[in-house]
Length: 387
Image (cartoon, rainbow, N blue to C red; front, side, top):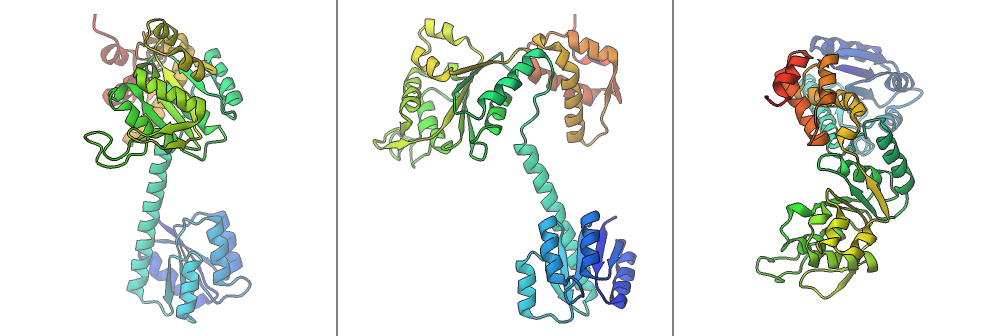
């Protein structure tokens, strides 16, 4: 049930609005002046506020300004018998959702309240989606390797030192890169990610440095590359061990000089970018086999962070499973499922070749296929390979 706050110094108005809106299914709280209204607004949550303008102590416009400062998401509808166009415009400028003259037209009032609540719901949903899209996930675990990584991040994040993150597929190298950016002085600027393994070698240079119109057959317009997009922020080069030799040379120059040139262009463009690279390959072995430039390796590896496999940090599995159960059950809109001790033991003993990525997929499978409590039999049936 939605809760509305009615603020008006006229008792008859409050009583009438309360009776009407209670009949319409709303829960109502009243305040006889702006001061009392501000106190209630600060102490409780309301879906919509109806506020008179001419009141003793604190008038409606002053209440509006202070309420918007406290919580700009609550729609406030101003109601006044002394309304003018100037007053209405001033109220809306200060953050009012709408302005209605007294005596209010009942149908218009009800429609305005409903629209205000629908807008509020959309705002809340949009914020929630943005948080889910942009929120950096926590680094789960208290094992010694994870503690060491967290300590290293705290030390190196505020610097501009280039970092090379190594580890198997699925261990969370991208998450480490995100946390470094989040804790850096560049956090307010973009984190731009490039998966070097997913881009064909003939397109990687265009992707990184951009291209000018007409520089090759399909270049029908100018393109801004990832280095320019990340200017002032961080560029995360994932799977850098798969980058072509020609692209490696250009990346090396960009790191040395802080300048790039678009494909097909001649103008040098200054870029201020912190580069974090990651790979699942042994780059020194790649250097020996002439697949990776030694000078680029040294440029990238000012700081080395190795992310251990899940098999090397099995004590973190219960914490990871608990977090995945929280997130997955929440995404599916179902109560959080529990997991039996024997089932957890089986998961700790499993050979996690796909690391944390595989563990999350397994937990999602168990959430979908199991009952309220995930049992050892569920793990045997849905996780362990058939013998």
